[in-house]
Image (cartoon, rainbow, N blue to C red; front, side, top):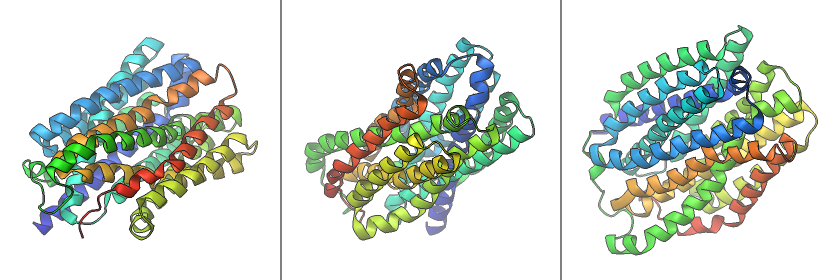
Length: 390
């Protein structure tokens, strides 16, 4: 059992890295895809809403399907789907074809996100200690890999079709190779005795608390989505940097996200999840404000890095709290929080595109700064979190 659990943990790391890499490859190719399709920032913002809509459908469908047939089946199938749909935006040559491609990419990403997080909760239950932040750290590792690969491909003159096409093929192969290491198909149905609240208490308390967690996830992950979808364009268009330099705006953000998430479990154990969310969100608000207002490339990169460091521990605390609030409904609770959170991450940045009609791109980043400040104030909701039994 111990060996199979270690393998399942390794496989979960692989899928988080894969998801981060696939999403990161799309992100670093956004400027080239925008130019190829001939669309404006405002139109791109609307298309990001389509991406978020597709993701929302994938999240809502993927959660119940994973509960019914098991994450061992849904995770690799979703990873293959997400990988193959990544190639579509690189092939788009018009606004309409790009719109359709983003809906399909969003759907694949949503299915993968909710199923791999549900599997991560299963693994965390069996370890009996917090490991969720480490999984999310490897998602950020994927973003770092994508930033480096994107910069290298840009320097070699690769277009979005070549870059995303190669990533799609490699991603599908990785998804299939890691599949046999996942937990057995029936493991998602079992609940460890002595964990969490009773069924009656869960039925009374979980829904209200889960929706509060979901609102916070929406706020925090919308802020993360801004960095994902607009940080590269910020350096490219506002500060007039080269494509290879602009890629490191997202790279610096993803790097500090990775480091922060590797440390977040220890900080949560010592200071509590509410403190991780409160102080992390406050630091994130300061970082994105620096990025928004700085006229210098170096300071802007520092701002994006601080933004990533602050946000790093926030989302794992929310997902873990949802998964452990009621073990008898862990999958449904993760699906609720993930659905609202990822809707904010993938669709929320569309608001930034619309706001560019009214103000410069960099000033629109004051919106995620306000969201982070709100999350810092509301972090006390995590004080009622049911801890994982040691």
